[in-house]
Length: 310
Ligand code: GUN
Image 1 (cartoon, rainbow, N blue to C red):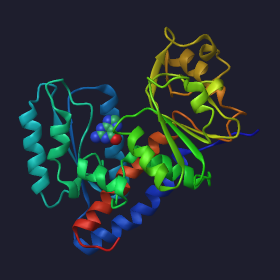
Image 2 (cartoon, rainbow, N blue to C red):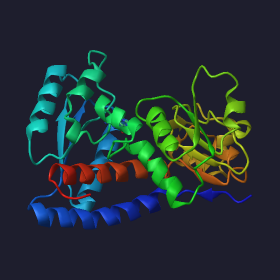
Image 3 (cartoon, helix red, strand yellow):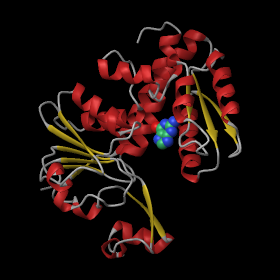
Image 4 (cartoon, helix red, strand yellow):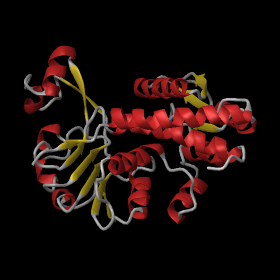
């Protein structure tokens, strides 16, 4: 079987192209650009890369990007005060706080609850989550929304199919279940306590991996002819890479040899080829889609706040 690669770079580029035109229209109508604000506290290197990517994407489509960059030592009160200010600021249409927060001193729920629902571009506020599950929402969390866009772009059948999501996070696993259910899939969420994970996963016509464990899912987890969507992003080095991944004739092996590290998903990339019918790889699959969906969500909220018909 030929495995079709779901190319997130290509599809996200197409999505951003359409949004660029809508942003121009918004700017002409309102006399200002749509605005996205990101609060980033701390020095987590992965978060810094994600924030940079968000900034680049905003710039490329004409969205005004405002970064509130705070040190590791920022207090919860400082972050809450920044949220309050941006909630009130008319030029800010979308607002998010980059997670994880810098220390256990922070109450993540308190921070998320403080964001105005009308500006909740991540869709993490409890009211946004309720709207997502009840079908009343106008946006969905960016990563699962990106997965849906990828599946639809490549015509992967969803209605009536069995979907298994591995991972139950608030950011990916749970909202992913809501979106697949909305499209009439039969949905299972599996997690670290699930008994006999391989046999659960082998039922999946659509398998979504979002656990953050490099190469956790292998050949024994994949139903032939299925769609495998890898959401994990894990950094591996020569020290902790499996022997098969170090083979310099493979893409990962070549990267490991050249740089000493490589990014790998939750699915063993060597297990998918010729088995799955569709495969969203790491990198170049869901990652770029997440950013495109953030931009799309910003525009949707900007239009809603300004009374522009969706
Ligand atoms: N950290 C990892 N993914 C995300 C995301 O989608 N939104 C926010 N705010 N933080 C994240």
